[in-house]
Amino acid sequence: QVQLVESGGGLVQAGGSLRLSCVASGRTFVSYKMAWFRQAPGKEREFVAASSWSGGVAYYADSVKGRFTISRDNARNTVYLQMNSLKPEDTAVYYCAADRGIVGRESNPDKYDYWGQGTQVTVSS
Image (tube, rainbow, N blue to C red; front, side):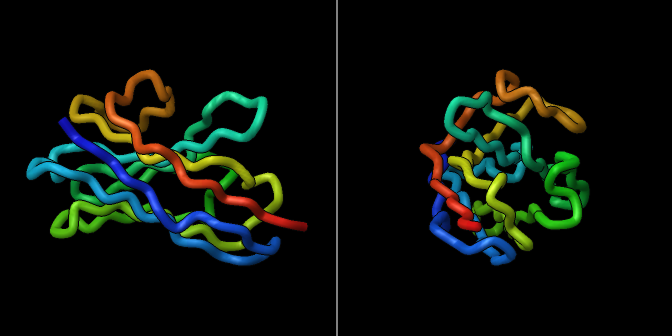
């Protein structure tokens, strides 16, 4: 079992930056693939980024590539999402997700077993 708690959301102007954090409980954090998803009102949950267990490989949605960076600190059981050059269309609730069985790039939220409660990111124009 893994419990995930996100933080770092807030209100920011377009062009600004935010860093989201997700802290995981448990001593086997290093064995989990970690990902970020987001969900805007009236839309389906969409993949944002994912990190391999080591943090050495990262995957991104085309819409955030070059602007967002996922990283993880296994010693702190924490995964981060650095978001730069934010746009109003980035406004959404951002969720942290984890799974032990996923290999490679997995953008289907149904494949992830563990989820945080979400943190709101609002980008004003």
